Length: 181
Image (cartoon, rainbow, N blue to C red; front, top):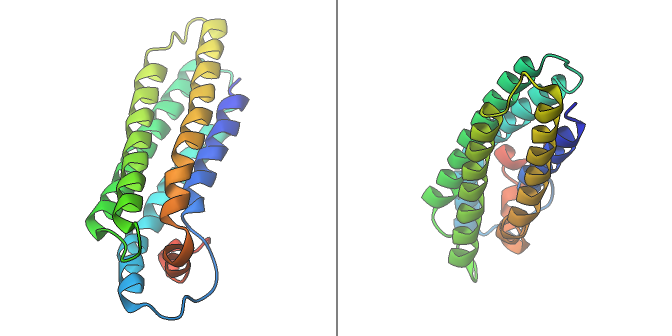
């Protein structure tokens, strides 16, 4: 019933994981490494919350009970909203990365993460308002929500990629909290 929703959520998870690289060294910029540690230390638990929420949605994709789908999706959207808000706070609290245009990159990433948080809160409100008594209307509502999630992923992708580009990305990739598990 909500396969498009699950596909769109996969894109959202990929977006967050774009922040979490793997790999090499940057020559040892201590200030940048310290900044990356601040961000990455709080990142992994939030990424796990987002992944867990998205897995719960995937787990009900073949569920016939509209009410159960609604409850699962609603809880997952709330978890995602909270996790993205926490990620935004972590990036904001870490300050601007000590690189050229670091302040702009940080502000853009915080805005993108806060926008995602707000959008997931909006999706929760929308799913909570769907009529579970009419399967056709419910399925149509889910389809619309799935399309909106896909748009969210692409809108925020650029700012997050910019934040983790160049030396910042290299510094983040060295931190255990930012490495893909």
